[in-house]
Length: 236
Image (cartoon, rainbow, N blue to C red; front, side, top):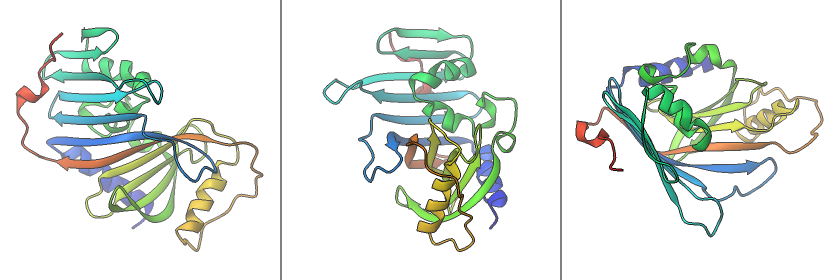
């Protein structure tokens, strides 16, 4: 399959789902590190058409600090957020609640909500936001064999996606937070590792390390029966 076909299958999978559930974690990386840093944010998502949504995440500020719990969601009518340091708050809309949580959740809440059309924050389509799709190869991610595809969002090939070969669910997203002109080198390195014969290597020199965030989806469930009560506003 071509990159465009794989991406369209992924988009159609999420657009057609009546409900969605996941759990996973985020990690930081520096280019060249063999071992990533420990998970510093965990999350769980629940979604049910049209506007039932619940995104819960936990983070901690340092290795020895306690985990903090935060949540944004909508009970079908009323949107809300609850951060550990500011308490429960009613929001004007679910999209506003998601937008407000983008920074504090390290954009984890946006990674999946942008694939669900009813609550997508941006007026342009996914394919309009992601350009220059590049086939990298196949690789296992969170226990599933995946298609690996790079795309350009703000900079050349600054995002990479691992999409399950069997059901086109998203299993991993890697997004650069520091991008230099040689970002294509990393994509070429990935392609070589996965033995893609027609990979094109960039001749640009490596100037400095790139940092990136990796969002991992360990569990993904489509169209599971969900109770409306599961999306109720949490107590204060």
